[in-house]
Amino acid sequence: MTCPGIVKLYDMFRCYFLLLLCPLIWCSCFKAYKGKINIDGSSSVYPLTEAVAEEFRKQHADIRISVGISGTGGGFKKFLRGETDISNASRPISPEELKISRTNGIEFIEIPVCYDGMAIVVSPKNTFVDYITVAELKRMWSPQSQGKINSWKQVRDSWPDVPLNLYGAGTSSGTYDYFTEAINGKAKASRGDYTASEDDNVLVQGVSSDIGGLGYFGLAYFTENKAKLKLVPVKYSTESEAVFPNDSTVQHGKYQPLSRPEFIYVNLKSAKKTYVQEFIKFYLEHASSLAQEVGYVPLPQAVYRLSHLRFTRGSTGSVFENKSIVGANLLQLLSKQE
Image (cartoon, rainbow, N blue to C red; front, side, top):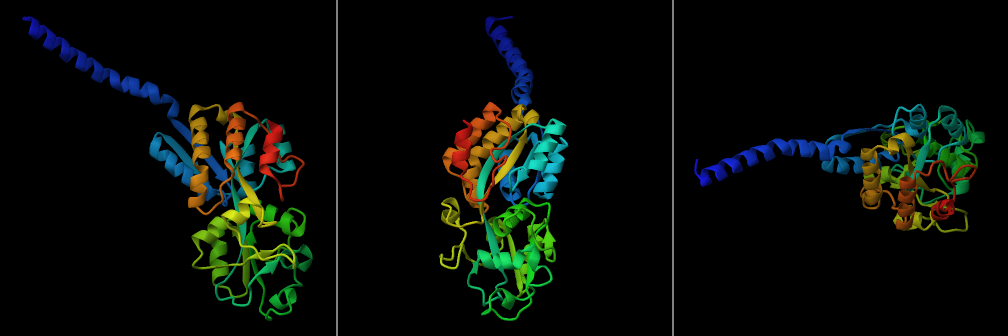
């Protein structure tokens, strides 16, 4: 065989060898990125987590991510049984849930992902409500008001004698816990005679067609359904100005007391998996831009940086243990832990 023939044959064998080798190299490189991530919990955090998951899937098709909704409380029940990798939460983990986590040996990393302003909404047919005070919200939602405050006129004398129909989060929702603490002074302290649902879309449908209806849920759901609803500005007191929830008022603490951080909780064992680490890194890198897209308010970049540092270090536990979330300063709380 001539030299050129030998060279040609050598090149052919080399090409075939590389073709056989490429799949092996590819599989080796991407082996760490195969897996499944189970997420459940808050309906309020769902839009952001689902948006992040959707973008992440585009780059990592071999990682399956399921995002469910069972409310913050329902999500924590699954999380503390070790059934999920990540739990969406619209409030910090509670003292009772912390006890269960310790009993069950479930360690976790707490990560704030955005701010949310709780929207107070009425039907567009309601022409008499221009603003509402925190005291009036308490008069509506207080446990003592059950069966007694049934008309708008009973809340403010200048309002008409129209039946007051309330719509709000279910009792296993973090939104319910935060709202009741912020308005009534104690988590879970609320009248029970209202239309409750863990699905915010059900509340949107109810309020939008009810002239006497008033409801509350995360700002993202108002943004998504603003053509069907009327947003009501809130006065902290009768002397203060009425404030609408938006990026500026929520981030700078002007929309009080209904501004709150939203969280994800990551199981520490899951956090040791490479594909989960990649997902959390992606989440924190894109949370700011995607939060705005789905109607939430980004956290300061310093908070995202501290959260990523806590995650990479494997810092477990809650910075809110034995602390109230209402009016909390995230940056200060996280900085004290480092």
